[in-house]
Amino acid sequence: MSLVNDMLRDLEAGKREPLPEGISTADARAEQNGPQRKYPTVAIAAVLIPAAFYAGINWQAASAPEPIIAKSQTMELVVQTAEPITDQRPAADNQLQQVAVAPRMQEQSQPSTEQGPQVEQLDDAEAALLARIEPLLKAAERAFAENRLMTPVEDNAFSRYQAVLLLDPNQPQALEGIRNIAQRYLRFYTETFNSGFSSTAEQYREKAERVVSGYPQLISWFEARVAETEANLVQVAEADAEPEVLDPTEATPIAARPPVEQAQNAQTVRVLKTDRDQRVAAQARNLISQGRFAPAESLLIAHLQQYPDGTAARTALVEFYLETANAAAASVHIEQLTGLPDYQRAHFQARVAMLKGDLEVALSTLNSVDPIVAEAPDFHAYQAALFHQAQRYREAAEVYEQLLALRQNASTYWLGLAVSLDALKDKAGALRAFRQAHLHSPADAPSRAYVEARIRSLSN
Image (cartoon, rainbow, N blue to C red; front, side):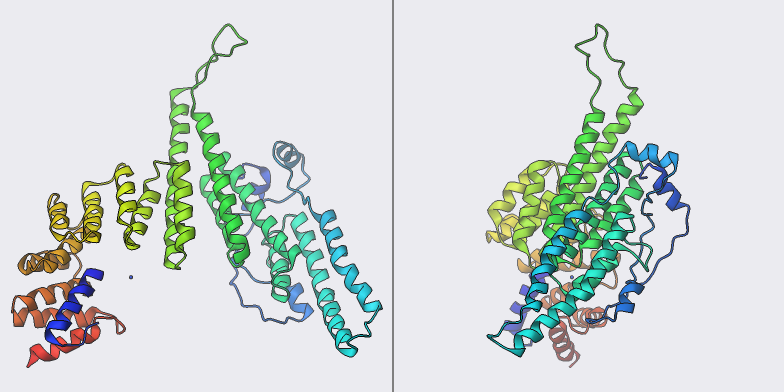
């Protein structure tokens, strides 16, 4: 698109016209058999009356159930084999709460004489705030201890901590509570995945992500924790996939695992790595779209240091370097990309050549491969733009016509065809293409003013 804009600017200069993207445990299964409902998320006002807090905050519950702490014999046997789902924090939290409250209460009993009524009024406001926060924290801790993390909607730990953070966005116990909920969901994710229920496990991971999504101060911690969790899963899967070896204490070898089981374990490793690779690439692109370039680059590099064969992440890193005009870094990672289609590698190499100002090399690189249009529309659109830049207008027009046969409503293809035909002095063809570009482009498209001006000029 940037090349099209360049062409438009050139046309503007010449014509003086205006120019303008399960858990394998009884607790999870028991909950799965129960009713599941979804509740809409509602906005919470900055100041809520106590009754609203105890009513809870609606939250959309994912289909994955929250494991329930039950006292059946079956549950006790299952829980003994895994990390106990209990609250390890209440005693410490209560001490922390007492430390936070006691000094303020002492200040209220000893009003200052230096600033008079103004200080007393401030202490009253703090005491009132604490009076509202304390019961919410206690309710949240009880819900967490009983594993009511995000359900039921009327009484769960997450909604209580949310309510506290609406009153005090940096309240440390509430932030720690949000962190603990996410951590527990990640534990459910690990245990469920290791039990062979990958789809349910993914729902737990998504729940963990939703819990922290509204709190920027927890995002970096969460991303690091997810990376650590998934790296551990890969290590476990890789260990399971390794063939049995001789036991040095025995004279006979350990029986090798059946080939089918070995193949299944190896497939699990590949799926985990691919899933992680694709997720990291998506996270990086999201950061880039927000203008957070440094965190995106760091995320991709750290992932590739651990998984050098991460094609999705390395592709995202190449795209990042191309967009930021870092031709040298892009070239290094293009060479390290494995399993990349020839046309995509040629596309990247041509973009590097253009960053170096070598149009002839860029076109020669693109012309060395010939993928079908339906397989590589972006490749052909870039090729057409370079044809136009090289004043090879007839070839540019032909490629744009092939692209339009694939996507008849693509305004950028119509615009590319229009400017190519305009350069060929094909007035009727250019007018038709400009009208189609105007018809299919959004009202705020940067090229719209230019297109309208050319329509007026060619209509005379």
